[in-house]
Length: 446
Image (cartoon, rainbow, N blue to C red; front, top):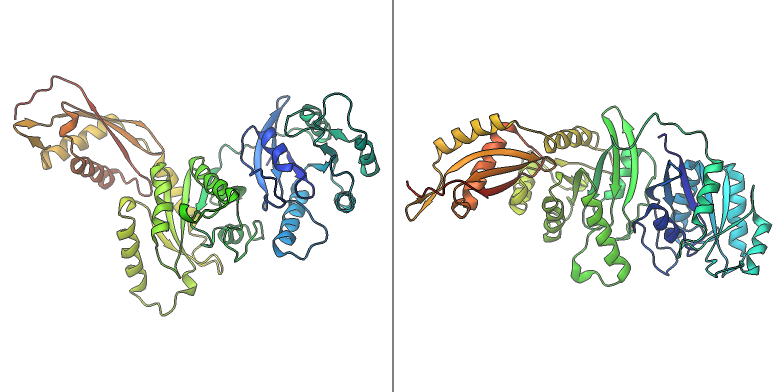
C-alpha cells in the first residue's frame, strides 16, 4: 500500500493505545489500566499536514516472559516492526527508564527502521519533568519527544517528527477500493485461524483460550480475486456471561466492526452445531443490513460424514436462521484450508448483490406482474392500492413503495414482494429493506 505505516511499540501499559486512539480520532483500541490489553495489531488512519498515515497499535513487548499469550504478543509486535516505515517507541516518564526499555531499544536498533523515542505521561504543564532527560541514554536519531497521550500535548511535535522520517509520498493506490470483510462469531469458532490461513502466516494470535482477540483487527490483503480488508473481531458472548469491563468493550468493538464492514462472514463451529448464540451473532449482521456469508468451520473434524450430512446441516441452519435464508452457506476448515479459497468468489458475489441497482421501470414492471398474480390485501371493504416502487439506496438494497393506506400493507404481503424481487433480480447474500409510504387519494373502493 502507498500509505506509510507507523507502528507504536513499547512495553505494556505505557499508553500506546491511548496515543493510538488520539491519533486516529476514535476509540478503536481498548484502553484500560491493565497491562496486556492490546494483544494483536490494531490498524487505523490519521492525517497530518495533508499526509494520510496508517497507524498500528501493538501489544506490549516483554523481552523475557514465559507466558504464552505475552510471547505471542511480542511476536505480533515484531511483525509490526517489520511492516512499519517509521516506529514510535513509547516509554513512561513516571516509571522511568527500566531494563525492558533498554532491551526493546536494542530490538528496534537491529530492525534498521527509523525510530522516534516518545516519552509519554509528561502531563505536567510547563517545564518537563527532570526524569525526562534520563531517556537520552536510549535516544535514536533525534531527541526524545515528551507527550501526554491522555491530554494530547506534544502529539503535533510527534507527528512532525514522523513526517520527517517518512519515505516520499506515493499516491498510486488507496484502501477505499478494498472490500471490508468482518469475520464474526462466538468465541473459539476459528475466526483468527481463518484469516491466518488466508494470509499464509500467523498474522493474528491463535489460541484455544476463548476470548484471545479482544479488539477488531484490520488486515489488508490482495490476490487474483480482488482487494480485501479482513476485520477479525472478538468472539461475541452471551451478555449474561460478560463479567469484566474489558470483555464488554470487546463485544462493542465486534458490533462496531460489523457496522464498518461491507460483508460479514458468520463463523459457526461445526463440532458444536448452531446455537442460540450463533443466531444472535448472525442477527447483529442482519440487523445492520450487511451482506452475509455463513461459514461452517471445522468441517474436517465432524465425524461419520456421508452424502446427506451437508444437507441435514444446511436444513438446521436455515431453520435456526430463517430470517436470513438469503445468505449462502459454505462448509470450510480453517485448519486444512478446505474450501477456504472459495470464500473470495462468495465475498465478491454478495458484495456486488448488496450494491446492485434496479431501474424504476423494471421495478414497476415487476410490481404490475406481482399484484396481478396475487391481489393486494383488503380489510373491511378497503383495498390496498400500490402506486409504484423505486430503489433509494444500496448496501442494503432499499426500496420505497408508495400506496394509499400503509396500514393495509401487511408484513406477509411485504414478504411476498421481497420474494418476487429475489426471484427476478437475485440479491443473493444481502438483506433487502422495504419502506412503505402512504400517499394519494386514499381511495377505499374495492
